[in-house]
Image (tube, rainbow, N blue to C red; front, side, top):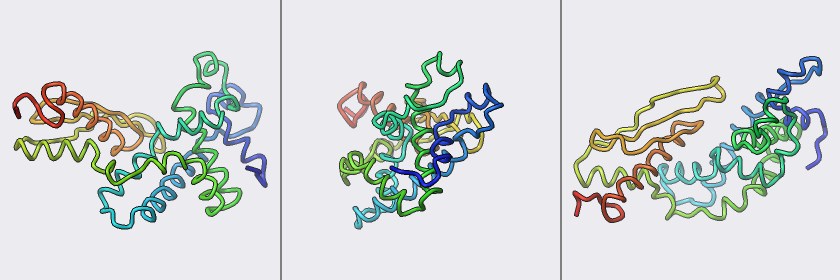
Length: 226
């Protein structure tokens, strides 16, 4: 991709640690562009899943979107693009493996999307983003929309158990929140999850909960169900 304003591309690659260690450089970190890019990715993927799955219900669309709009997916695309090698890092972040850190790869990818949006507008950002996410989008299906949260909810209803997702920790600035969530099944903590969105943290907690409960019996059952 070619930028009309190369400075936007440069800013997208500036990690906050570089700004902290090189104030004389007079550059901004990529955090504002990452904030914007996160919103663009969310909108583009939401629009795309609505078009691809016209019969899907809202809950299914939410699951399909979450499968693509996640830190894990963003980091994977950032790694495929080799963005870690291009990051401008402070010495401390460099020394501790910052170029390969998943959170940095996710942030720089979203910052790149934000920079492209500012530079060339929504249509260009959407076109490029759909190309970069083609592999993840192809993997989507309505079968996947019955995710662990849905399975866990069905199990709770079948067993007349209460299912609760409890936020136990919130960290980071407002635009880069990290949530930690526990899944309580019948009052017992059976899974925990982390993510930049509550829904993402809940999904991870549900996946862990299903894995925990499956170890106690057949898939989809606990030992008590048997």
